[in-house]
Length: 252
Ligand code: XBP
Ligand code: MG
Image (cartoon, rainbow, N blue to C red; front, side, top):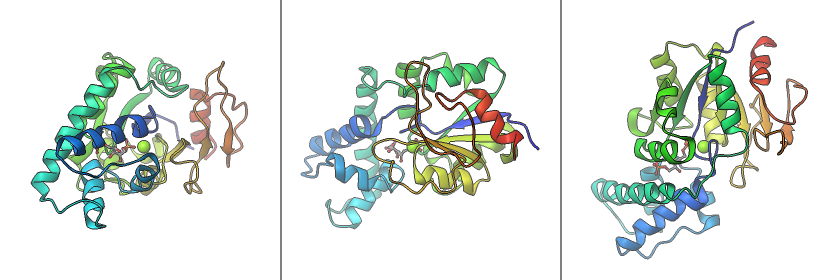
């Protein structure tokens, strides 16, 4: 038996639905300004999400012949402009948090659970979302904000979770991951964590066999969630509480 001490949160798709109307739009703005003809439509972007990291995603599109050759430096410049465009979109407040995210974060924080971030996105993009969608007080409340190129390999590699746990002096036995995608789940599981998955339009058909719970959202009293996979047979899943998270640990 072990005890839940920390929850590490993925960002894109988990805290907020940032991909379709945030990152994707920002990539297209950067492509247009750079004089490139390439645009990532909603379904193409869904395919490209299997590659984590924005620079890596651009490189993949080049390698498969859908964008012109570019040096790493040119990719980095293009991606820097994309990040700027993304920050501007987020500053408009157009991407709200997903249902239940604020409620569960507040509940866990008040209960003294350590909270952190483990994401493949760029720190500047993460900071914009915290500032404008979550609230600046959360810069202090997250005990670790592990993001982007800080580790050698992005999700599905375990690196970012291992890094965050190392920073906090925590073991995987006492840490829960919140994810939305197969790559995210694999990253958490490769690091030995338990993992709750909230699906979204881009990830609902991913393989979540290894997840400890798969739900439509974290839910709220006025916006209940649907359980899609509940291997530990948790009860009362209208919305996910800290007690649900803790019971994943007590039972195993
Ligand atoms: C999702 C990603 C990111 C974003 C784009 O990250 O793969 O690459 O799509 O962000 P997560 P950048 O779900 O781990 O938060 O362009 O800043 O890489
Ligand atoms: Mg994600």
